[in-house]
Amino acid sequence: MSLAVPAVLLVLWEMCSRHAIVSPRYFPPPTTVGWVLVDGFAAGDLGTQSLVTLTRLGFAFAAAAVPGVLLGLLMGMARPVRDAVEPYIAFIFPVPKITLLPFLLIILGVGEPAFVLTGATSAFFQIVISTLGGVQTMDPRLLEVGRNYGARGARLFWKVILPAALPAIFTGLRLGLGLALVALVAVEFIAAKSGLGHLVYRHWQMLSTPEMYAAFAIVGALGLLLTRGLRAVQARVLTWQEEVGRL
Amino acid sequence: MRALGRWLGEQHWIAVGSPIVLFIAWEWASATDLLREAFFPRPSTIVIHLRHLAADGTLWDHAAMTLIRIGWAFALAAVLGVGIGLAMGLWRQLREGLDPVFAVIYPIPSILFLPLVSFLVPPGEIALVMTTAVTSFFLIAFTTTHGVRQIDRLVVEAAVHYGARGRRLFATVLLPGALPFIFTGLRLGLGFALIVVVAVEIVSTSRGLGALLWLSWQILKIEDMYATFFVIALLGAVLSYGLAALRTRLLPWVQDVTARSG
Image (tube, rainbow over all chains, first blue to last red; front, side, top):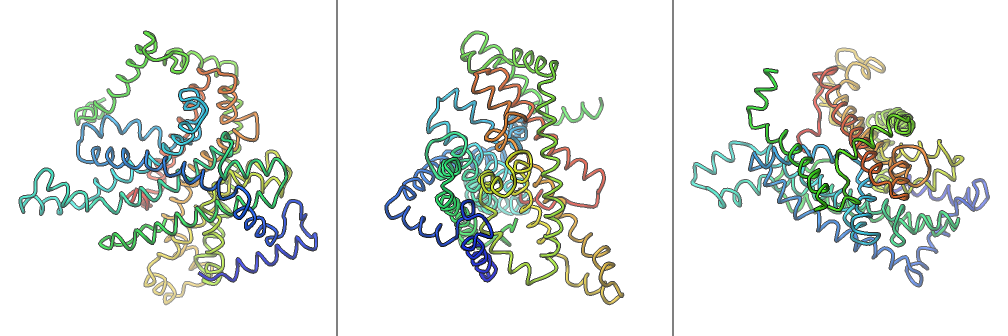
């Protein structure tokens, strides 16, 4: 990746802001934002708030990943389960998961469980669908070969079905983690009183723009780390898959 | 009827029966207070409220508002996304220059752009629509770029040998070649426009389905909340499955490139 263009853009922004070509109040120079970032991590609460978001993300992801993969595998292998569950998955999947927040807020009360579960549902449906897809699209010849060599039941599952579905499962987990982050930040922006999303909202309302951009930058870095980092992990760990989906 | 019978015969009756059973169980459970009716109102009550909302026009007002916003945001994202995506697919320098910028901005949840956009343009409808367009734009630009890049070099070279150049090369080789990817991008982009518009409506306005849902929660009109949720879900189903069906009908030769990977 060439970094020339981003560098030029940042320098341009810096100069425009310093010479008040754009309003420095709304678009503070990047160096100012940079120092706010340093201060925020050294003394302020940027580190704490990042940790709050990351903790929520961890819980949400765990709550989505285990049941999501299990349900996806079960749906892929047992036709009645798939028929019974698929209508709900298909109906809820395209729904913005943030709409579940008010329901969870009345059922669970305003608090962490409601926030975390909203993020978890966002990831859950993606994970189920990817896992199911992985089982359904596996080469039927693999199954036949496995059976011919005497693999049955648990052995067939561990030696044939699971490895064949693993790339799709990993893709589902990767996408799910990204979706959970998006949903959680939106929840924080809208309803929570802590976390990076809330920081952006609060500093927007107070017009403390350097702090707002600082929180914004951390979310961007986090997103980049999750998307690019996990893709690299996937390419390294699952060496037998042809190509990691670029989309 | 015959097709329906055959479809049901292939064990699909579970797919039809399971929601029916669920709704009957739900109705019964909240009627007998097994589920707290304050939180889980009976489906029949929700339907009554849905009809009230529809009858006095509230629902249509909010739904129309949301649809108009999605329409504008999607149009904006589609034109810019396909345009820039094609340009990035064709020119390496542009692609390599913009790639890192896109990579950083894309994973940022769209709703965070609301403050930024509202600094750039007057807060209100325009800011709302532009925020809604952000993620869809990136998705469409990404898929379009990828669509151009994955075209077989041999096909392009053959076309060039047969004298296709400039506009002709673009219109007869590059664009059709990238089309399946462009369509996937558009479909995903439309889905994301719905997701983002609901979130933005919750924070920044009092009209639209997202706002209706949130206001119903704040004044604890639980039945209206369920009714609005149902409408949003229906809209989601129409946008994502309707568009897929439309594509199969209109462009049968165009395959959905993500159907495989999920």
